[in-house]
Every structure is written in C-alpha cells, then in structure tokens.
Length: 168
Image 1 (cartoon, rainbow, N blue to C red):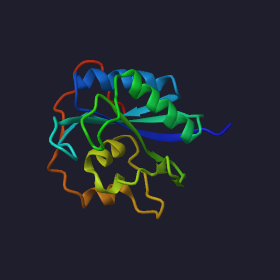
Image 2: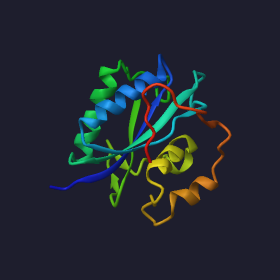
Image 3: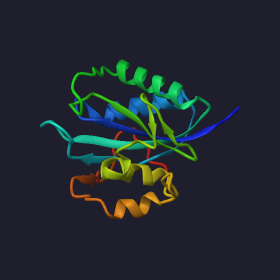
C-alpha cells in the first residue's frame, strides 16, 4: 500500500472561520494520520471584494490516491456548506491539495503541486510551517520561492485560540 505525504491547504472567509478550519482538520484526521498543522494566517482575498481569509495547512500521511483524496476534500467542503458559485469568490471552506512529496500530476481535474502555489504567500507560508523541506518538481526549495513573494497581505495570527493545535 502506498502512503502519500500530502499537504492540504485550508481557507475560510465566511462564518466562524476558525471553527470551520478546526472542524475540517478533524475531518482530515479521518482520511489519514495528521503529522502537522501550520499556524493560522489571516490573509487578503484574491478575486472580487470579500472578507479576509483565515488560512492554514495540514500535513497528512494518507493511503488515498490523490484524486480520491480530492473527492473526499470536496465532500468535507460540501458538508461545511460550501457552494461553488463564483471563481475566487467568498467561501465557507476551501480545501486544496497543495503538494504531495515526490509527486507531479497535471490533469484536467487536479494539478499537483497546486498550480498557483509559487505565486501565493497565503498558501506557501502555511505549507512551509508543516513541510519546510518541500521542493518544487524542478528541485527549487519552496522556502527560497517564498522569500521572493509579497507577504504584506499575510498576517500570522498572534495566538491561535480555541482548538487549533499548531504542531510542526
């Protein structure tokens, strides 16, 4: 059985964002073994005017094939109340496969690593919290990529409260 080392990005900008991310993290525990949770980040949205996001990442050891995992992530989003209406629009919950160690996939329904990962500090910073060793398919360290990005719209939450347990 193949076990995939996966980083899932979490985002929410509607409702109780932190409670939503906490619930999604618990749901991810049912799909595999959570080996890391990033800090929480409040970020400026991409796309139309909308509330700020709360973003995080969870590192997961998972036996599900990536496309099967994606289907499970969509199910978690749907159960949280996500409705897919507008590209880059506001959402109760957004779950994305950001990176899978040693895997490159370029399909119509799924691209790994996430195609916008190297352009988005709000996704790359949480990923680096849980996978500081992560590299791109070309061998470039994501840590080096992050240093070249604008981080001005990304703020580490001073102290996560509630049930969000950051673990490296």
